[in-house]
Image (tube, rainbow, N blue to C red; front, side, top):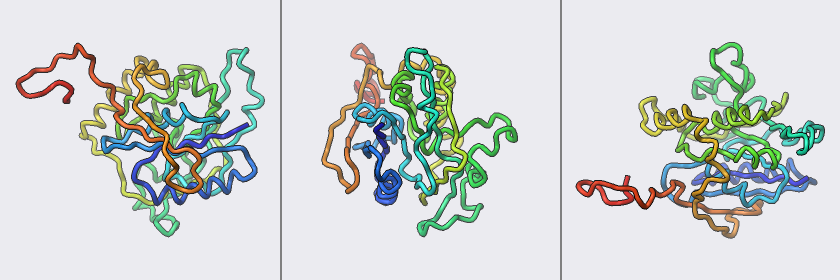
Length: 275
């Protein structure tokens, strides 16, 4: 069984140099590859598009979608329940594995940050990423950081929804997408990650892109056709890996589909193709 680690990336060289050797150390003796899916433009970051691009060129049976700032401390990326899940002929898709049980936010010296320096929405992660479930109204299982998919499951659910930009609810979208396709998931009981140091990138509540993302999440049933099989696929190319330990490096650009040719734009203030 081959594991494909897919890391969405742009301008986080320190993080990438930190986690790649650690993944290789943990996976020693297993069949795996590390894929970096880089956004090679300066438009708003599109993590979920990049994850789909990486999956489309991956060779593995298991996809591990790994945030570049999640350092695995005590982690197993596998779960034997996949081997006991009914086969494809049963119509039941293999389950998804969530390896992160706890996450500790650390500084550049890999020391735990004081709790007041951790973004408020993540302070409970040190007690367990799902520790607020049943306590805080509306809290659901955490689907960020690191997700492990059997390939057949990821392809059947059409991958990640690519419509979200920047700091978006793509992980929430995936959780709902799995519910739609009746796919189960299992949380590790012991997996520990460090969240590596970087400035808080969370948007303000009145940020227009954040508001648009929330609006898109509200129409999730209409987003199911968007994903691995979207009609528009961003241009991509394979390049020589830019870091030792990376097996495949793919660059992609222009993650927004162009407007239809019949798109009519006023000639007073805009030219065709501008937003």
